Amino acid sequence: MGKKIVLITGATSGIGEACARKFASGGYDLIITGRNLDKLNAVKAAVETIGAEVLVLQFDVRNRQEAEKAVASLSGKWTDIDVLVNNAGLALGLEKEYQGDMDDWETMIDTNIKGLLTMTRLIVPGMVERNKGHVINIGSVAGDAAYAGGNVYCATKSAVKTITDGLRIDVAESNVRVTNIKPGLVETNFSVVRFHGDKQHADNVYKGIKPLCGDDIADVVFYAASAPEHVQIAEVLVLATHQASGSVICRKPQ
Ligand code: NDP
Ligand code: 8X3
Image 1 (cartoon, protein in one colour):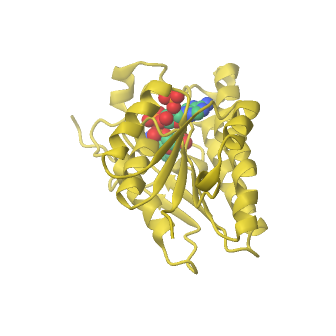
Image 2: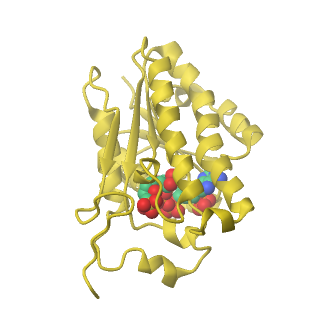
């Protein structure tokens, strides 16, 4: 039997990149997707040294035509995707809802909800047909309850929870498994993106607390994918020890 194949969206940074390393070490071959070809090729080179065969697909998950074309370009063994990690996503801004930037809202909704749905719609029919597969969505503690300024981002992650639960119901007659991993604070490029490149503002998010790192989440994603076939890890909330919820974070005074 050949190696299993995982497709990871947004594999150029943070949690997605850590998942690429973890699945490569765990004996998978990889399809890594993202917008930045240079970064994708750098991740490919790094995980190839671990022994994985890697295929790069460059596209923006918000662009349905690009996504369809990329998935349609797969041939041979690469069409039999065992695990889809819907990771590509972002937060933009932390303004009050009545002061938020509507372009930012659209980007978050198009990426976190519609992009995830596009990938699901393109990949899951093959899994159902083969009666085998696993969809792992990266949700968030932000989807459990709104926090100050989180409004639209929280809503997108709440949608990820509902979309994940809906898919789990719709494939329940098959052997396809569906998981929602909900991280809390993870130090990646996430906050730099959220604050439109303001690194100092981003660093403040992780002041006084030891946050999670991408590898911590990749371990949980890989654990879910590696569970025995009759075991479906439906949902996991993963928090730093001093974070209790989206809005309760105990920081040591600096
Ligand atoms: P990063 O910013 O480090 O990584 C985000 C990844 O998503 C990048 O590879 C980015 O690529 C990609 N991406 C963003 N927009 C698109 C798009 N339109 N098309 C394709 N790829 C895209 O952040 P994280 O690793 O932290 O975030 C990964 C996921 O984890 C997100 O869904 C996020 O919401 C979620 N999450 C993060 C938490 C955190 O605290 N960090 C906590 C809970 C959930 P590019 O370089 O092209 O922008
Ligand atoms: C990312 C975690 O708490 O910054 O989803 O929204 S949080």
